[in-house]
Amino acid sequence: MSASLHIASYNMHKGLSQFNQRLTVHELRDRLGALGTDIVFLQEVQGVHGVRASRFQHWPAKPQHEFLAGHVYTDFVYGKNCVYDTGHHGNAILSRHKILSWENQDISAHAFESRGMLHCEIEVPGMPVPLHCINVHLGLTERGRRRQLQMIAARVHAMVPDDAPLILAGDFNDWLVRAGHFFEDELGLVEVFKTHHGKTARSYPAFLPMFQLDRIYIRGFSIQSARVQTGNAWHRISDHAALTAQLRAV
Image (tube, rainbow, N blue to C red; front, side, top):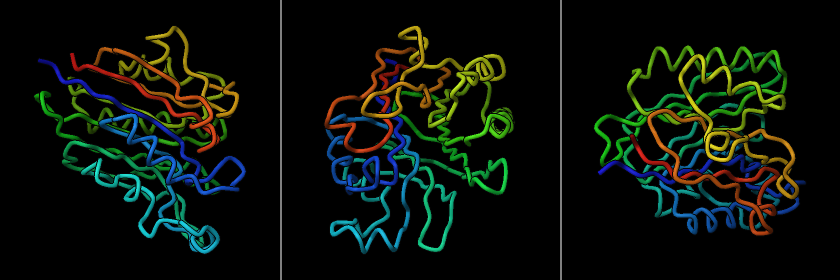
């Protein structure tokens, strides 16, 4: 029987509400627990922030990715991308299954934006070979994103076997919806929402999603369902909406 996976991708806005007024990481942990996902791709994860830790009474003692993993996700990895005087943030992957290896690669396109590509291999029961997962948060400029797409493709060609299952997810900041054609032609990937619903998901801003910034690209899976997590319980957590998908290995 082929393996089934429930995954999510979410720009969690450093565990704060849209205008940084409320700490939301506790709500996010509850929501993730209710979803029952197997693997979660998180962007803008706050590893450390001294000022915010003193400002918010219930700021977790652990880094946010460890706090969110709790007792649900047995394995997790964090890629520190942006470092500043008060702390650092980056991308994280949480998994119910064993993470075999991982690496965080710097894909910053210029000195003013620190960006990373978090790549791990996961041992999934029922899958004969490891699943490759790549989590990204791309830059704000079109020129920078073009360079970053090339760096992603170069890593996949170098590190991921052609027949290996692959999930590439994150916040692509792809306002013009151009990345999909590149990944399809270069890597043989399909975007989950475009394939399942005919168009990429609107995920930003969370309270009234208009822009298609967040994506889930896959290879080696069929799509059972794909959903944008909306409603008051979600749009109070971050400025982005969460994407979820039910996949089955083929």
